[in-house]
Picture 1 (cartoon, rainbow, N blue to C red):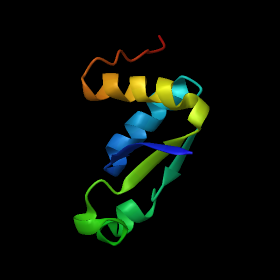
Picture 2: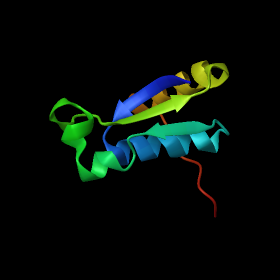
Picture 3: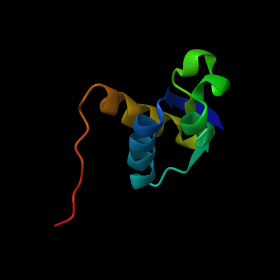
Length: 79
């Protein structure tokens, strides 16, 4: 497993949803502690949630996250 994203809880959940939408399995580290006591997980409580993916999905996940952070993500919606 490779860490592909560190961030606050709500942003990490957005990224997780984008990855899972593309059928990439995501492991979430510090999901609950980031909400309860983020300063215990990381210094100052900054970016406590880590998302990890399998090595075989790393490049695709990295591309999806880069597009998200650059504001180039198109969200698919159901009508």
